[in-house]
Image (cartoon, rainbow, N blue to C red; front, top):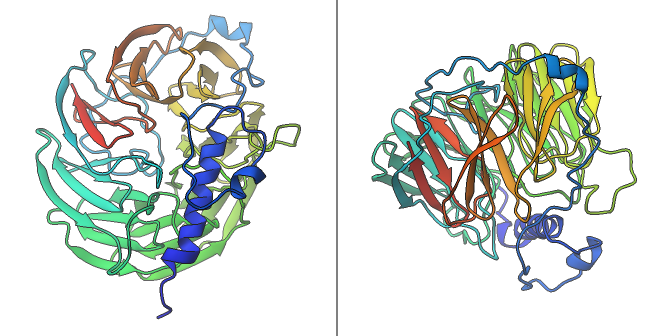
Length: 444
């Protein structure tokens, strides 16, 4: 087996990714080249802010005013087993109390610092919640009480986990699967955290895996897509996509439905594969045609694609949001809307953050906006998710907002006192929030 080169080559890749993220989220920077010329020990100053114009090309359609926004009845979900909740990343309306009082809060691991950013979403399976921190350590907690159940480092023996951020978690119920910045994919026993198998690699994973039907699907930082058997970690197929030197840091994941795997890439392409053998079925580009600054034109699809009722919905950082027919890739519609968050589909509408502070309800039929709302400025918002018939978003200043899906009106706001960049997850009538410093908060 080839010797690992994490401390040199891989660390360089991860540092470059982190610098890219810092550039893309700091105000007043005009190009990437100045940042990449800086010394290795440079610590990026300031807070993360938007480089995307919130106005985008989003305009409300007066014709939609006659069509009320109707959301499905709330359903109780016992688990949030995938990074996006389910393999399709589609959950509609989840059961959740409107009170959202803190039930417990625990230190869930190492948070963001100058060496790395906390990006992996928690998952909830079988009454436990699992968190992957910036030192490649997984912790399992009792989802009801927050009690720590076990801890497992994913770093290979002899490797320094500093800066080993990225990757994520998924589960099939009995096992926890992880992708890591070391390039490894692992399976752990969900009850004990014991390692079952490890598939070593050399190229870091930026994204979380998706697990369904005995297969694990994941994408590395150079857009290599892999499919492994969940039973033993054996490789089933791979596909090498087009690499991208610079991208906004994120942890997205593939969407899987009806024998198809839809993978977002850092180059702004959406590629659909046949799940069984990896044969590409279709692809489309959501990257901008040009006219943006070098930072704003970073083209990756940072949010997860969503598969819902035979259609795929996705949004790119640099320019466009679109809907595509799952089986053929036929464009249903494409609009000039930029964003880094996963769209939330419920009923006949898609709820999406355009830029960092504009929330909109977009018709799933034609992409036209029913309404758009300017969220409080001076902060970066993440989300939404829908719980109890309300849209829920969190912000970099520690705000948690509930918004009416019918009108876009902000119904309530509360302060959690810590910066938040990861979209909350919902399971068993509980909202779980992972803050940027690694604090896990349960709200009911």
